[in-house]
Image (cartoon, rainbow, N blue to C red):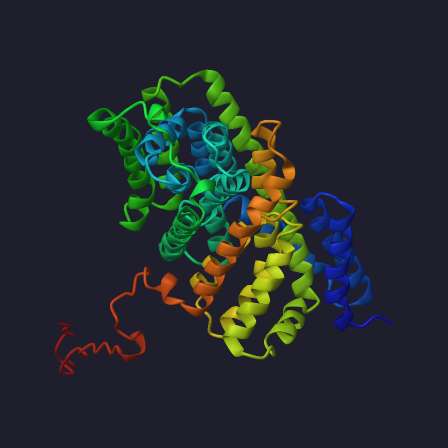
Length: 470
């Protein structure tokens, strides 16, 4: 006779087998969940009425207004990917920083951060920067590993800098507001940019021949003409960033409303750049439809799996495994981040967010860990999934647009130092939680449990007088 205690590890093991076979994640989750659900009913672990919760949970997903932010932000990024904004930014900042060693790399990092704050998609950033800056870096003697690494890494900044799609999903899974997730990600975003800039600065000091400055003949613009070109690309981007993020932080719009405004703003930028066409809109909407459908199917599959997993006391099994780790909060965070780091070799960030995070969040809450800090920390960790050789999507995107003379080995080896820098950021966020929590709304500072509300009782009327209330 099978005991209920062995069901959670059997479910988890079955899911791993399906994923290793290569079966689609959404359908793997659903198949494993339904199989073990029917098996649990036959074995008497729960009644058929328990699975009656499934339609309600699926309807709850489909009616979740917060998830509308995903197609809006995806549409915004898809439009900006094709409207020429990245080209203007890269060419202007490349000319501006080209006089110093590593100038092109600095330009790629800065533009990657700006694109991350207005697109939220890794593919748009990596492809745009790779097509424009990689040929220039190759022409003027940049080390191939430095050039490919900085392009791929700067594209992955998108995953941490708001309005990141990962933060929206993590906020939904952790039960925290997207505004708090975005505010908490401000500190790690700044730290990541500083780490990347410091790395290039170190290379330019100790090995300047690997990141040479541009020769005078390559600097075609100077003075006010150059500054005007940079500002012409920067100002619309800053306006769009405020339209999206500023309205959320000021409480003027929900993430869904801000995403809708961002999509309209992206279309406006496409019109200003003379790139707005119906073909562009069709391509952007098709890309948005594919990503949104993928997310919803994975989320529905994860709901089926998690419902059955909870029914066989899977949460207690996870809690028993993780709550007894040595080191308390820090030990738990170190173990979880090592686990997520290796999972990211094989799973996409959406899959990790929908499968793993709901299992870890209750344990983190029981250990007294701030869930916004926990979510931002996982987001910082999961961005390494885009840089892992040989499965990182950023590396695939770069390989797809790089010239034939760029070897795949250089792309893979070039990614390793940047993965190391991202892991340094994970360590900083673990041991310095204020890097996340400092940016959160601290409230009024009043403990609600100490508040007393005294209501005066009405005067009691005489027996013969009508009742009077004051």
